[in-house]
Image (tube, rainbow, N blue to C red; front, side, top):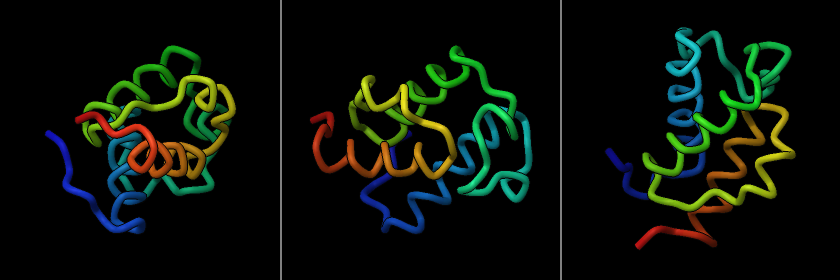
Length: 90
């Protein structure tokens, strides 16, 4: 299920919803400033699984080098935005 080029704010909401679903939380429990590790309890396998889901949903190839610098949900949003512009899957 891929999303067609949503505006930046909508993309962020969709990323937050996907991350919330991954951790079995309500979307309103997750914010852009939520720490993936400290607030959501993510470990390295969660980060990898979320990145794979985001790649599939948004039809883009996420930069694995940048994945190592993801700390917050906002970082994931920025990673997806960057990948959609620079690494779309066609």
